[in-house]
Length: 109
Image (cartoon, rainbow, N blue to C red; front, side, top):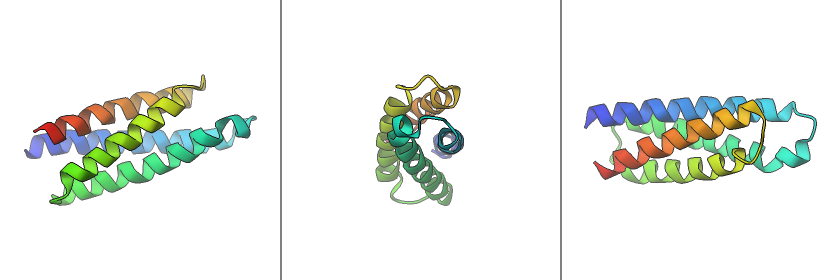
């Protein structure tokens, strides 16, 4: 069980970092209006992924529910960032998709 937790924690941290990079990089883009939703969801997703990683590392009894929330946030973020051609958006979407898989695998255990 600890092994699957660690894989999920790693995926959450990777997603959190990618979302933070996307959030900051998007704020520096020319067309902020086009990226408004991307900025919002990447920031929210980063927070949720960070929370999930912290709670999993503590061995929370709420792991299943937290992982489900994290997977949902990552799905929304991946879908939104996937609409944009920026490299930071594509990297964020990919990290979020990996996090969805890791969270769903952890919940299925």
